Length: 116
Image 1 (cartoon, helix red, strand yellow):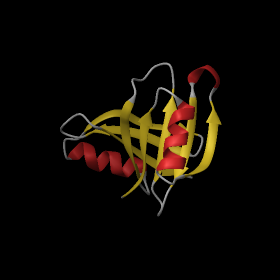
Image 2 (cartoon, rainbow, N blue to C red):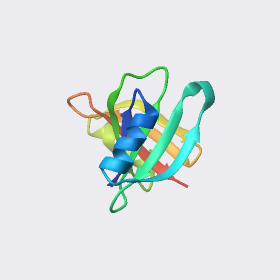
Image 3 (cartoon, one colour):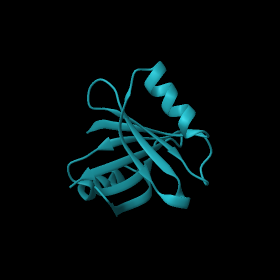
Image 4 (cartoon, rainbow, N blue to C red):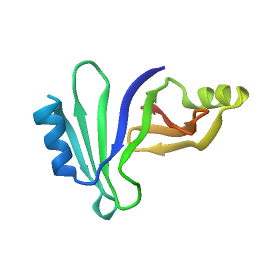
């Protein structure tokens, strides 16, 4: 498994984009307008790991989750369940593949993503 992205919920998308690009040196990889559901911007730095910033009407600002890419999400979830890991969202189809969420012992969300 490798860390693919971290997700941060933001209050002000424009201010956050400016911070990550102008101050931190990231480049905008892509943007998604989800209408009333919010906006997503993916920012690329060095290496493969990305920062995903989301503004939506539901979640509080702050670190939301760590995204880890897996080859076979169903097998990985089965393995993690056998080790007592709490699954908070079973594998669900998304635009780019499948997504599931687990929690670490401290309640931190970890997104597992299998890309098609």
